[in-house]
Length: 270
Image 1 (cartoon, rainbow, N blue to C red):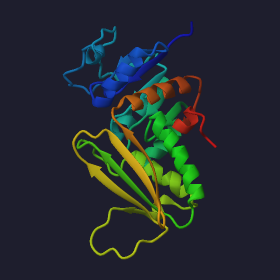
Image 2 (cartoon, rainbow, N blue to C red):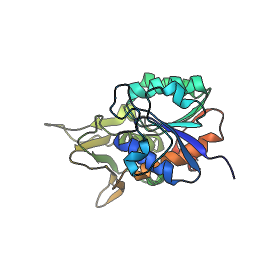
Image 3 (tube, rainbow, N blue to C red):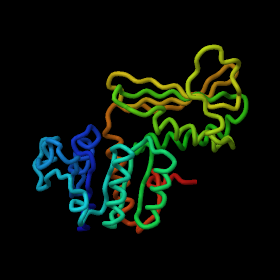
């Protein structure tokens, strides 16, 4: 029997952290190796299995460097500033990283790319298998609906989400823009107000909704004359993100280094 993939989880007590713990514990090919929380957290010292009604030999710690020893991968869905600290620790320990954190500035993305020269990194705005299939469908649709269709992207998330548009919505915009031969930075329109004038047909519009406990809804509309094509994805729980992340952890175990995304993990590249 092969050795299970030993996975560490950052932000263990958070909504995604708990879901990741559940996903790792229920997969026979993976093992919960470590769980991290910030220093001073009430959860430090406790069994992360408590979150999902199980008992493990792991105790939540704030000592990331020590916890990474012997791990194959760290999964991180925290905040950009924390993720970059964890990235440095993973580099020092030679541990791969699966990153679902969103909201990185260009400098942060450059740091991820630099780290990937020495360790394997899967960085994706959305780890859901379904969402990544949606990305592929958008690429195909945009290549066909490349004239006479206006593109609008609408996303909705829970009231606690701190960045907008979502990383998934932005990635959808990038996929469509690339397929149309455009640069998203040049054509994106983030919200409209007042007298805006007629729509520029080359733009890609974004609209954001925040409220309640919406896990994540995304729809891309290709609006033509007399018809509208919609391609979207709705998540009813965070488990798809956790399951995709575990799949990514298995993927990078066999890699020495490199920057990957879920298209690589799922074999959808090209």
